[in-house]
Length: 238
Ligand SMILES: [Zn+2]
Image 1 (spheres, rainbow, N blue to C red):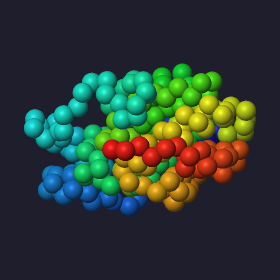
Image 2 (cartoon, rainbow, N blue to C red; image 1 turned 90 degrees about the horizontal axis):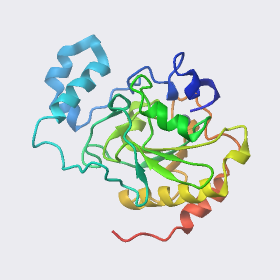
Image 3 (cartoon, rainbow, N blue to C red; image 1 turned 45 degrees about the vertical axis):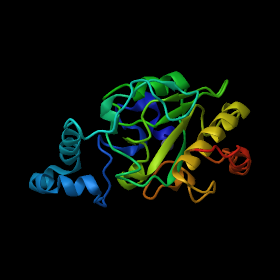
Image 4 (tube, rainbow, N blue to C red; image 1 turned 180 degrees about the vertical axis):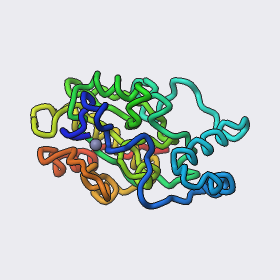
């Protein structure tokens, strides 16, 4: 998020520039799109929102989903607090979409507000994780196998895991050592899970997502320090 669409202003503009879907001008043809293609094509101008609805319905067919355990998290030690289902899309990553990016955000607001708006169906956006300033506490709100609406770009949503950090882009003191430390462990774990190099090609800021008008994590996010910390996290054996 950024200062132009902080959670407080979500009525006028939703986080991450979405308008309720994670569409972009460029259609993505994934395995699911092909599977539901016949139906989706018939929906024509109704567009992505309707096609997503079809996709979601399809995924609800019994026997299709991989087993999920309520409360299970992908990052050890994270709390689980589910985001509203309106703010993400059910998927089966990395089997249907390749995960090859971590997207770093700064909330432009307090931690409790992020938790609250991600549970609000009218927000239509959420990240997989939220990191707290004071102690680096991590809450997971969307499973990594699912597509969270956070990048404002459909393709990037499908290929990435999103992390929100409590803080403000213009107040560097809100991004603490605890923030960097917890986030580095989280990002290193994501890279290890999907076999990604721990580099700036695969770990990007929201500002670097093509087509975005967002500025987070902002000029005060210390990328050199952060990347050093990410690389220093011991590789976890699968
Ligand atoms: Zn953002």
